[in-house]
Amino acid sequence: MRKLAFTAALAALSFAAPGAALAAATVIDFESLALPTTSYSVSGVTFTTGAGGLLSPVDGPNGTRTVIGNFVEDPNDPDIFSFDPIRADFAGVMGTVAVDLGDWPSEDFGDEDLLFLEVFDAFDVSLGRVEWLIGPAEPDFKTLSISAAGIKSATFGSIGGGGSSVYADNFTFDTAVPEPATWALLILGFTATGAMLRQRRAALA
Image (cartoon, rainbow, N blue to C red; front, side):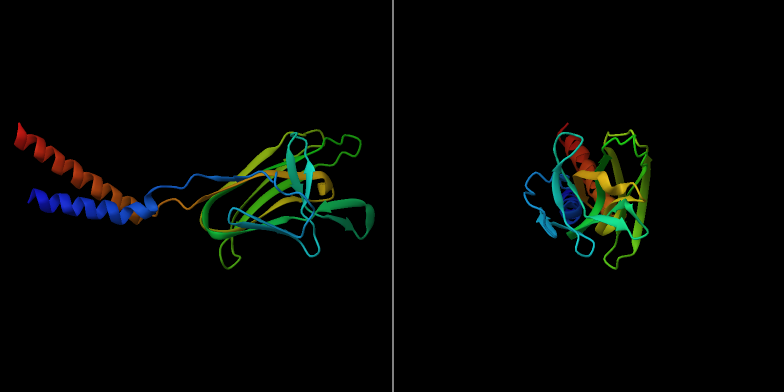
């Protein structure tokens, strides 16, 4: 009976194991992005911008290499530019996505920036969106993060007239958290193993 319980426990644990442990989060700092390009692939994710956009590596306000999309000029006002959002497509399915977004202080122009991060499933259906409005004198990077099941792509950047100097850094992503069924299998496995060990100790006492 103990042998049967031990076998059942091992089976439950081994079945649950593939989804039980989260892989370490991957952080892309864009340090290897050397030239402006329309596409940048690294660590299982491909970054692109809008039609004809460029991924331009620059030294950002945090002192490290960051990335910025192409500027889009307002057709009604040549003095107003906006940030062409960057899109990230994942080779696998993610559960958490985060990115640091920041801006050079520009008090003379008073450009507020509405930073955003949005994630999508495999059918480009939005799974969530976060926004952060920063003032004209906020050079510090803000971390925007979303967790959701089934993330296959993300877009990030800023919207509005003041987005021409927004930079992105430390794009971070992780695999999906275990499903409830996986947690149930883990609990069952650990419970059965614990019961078996208690029975074995009692028999040896």
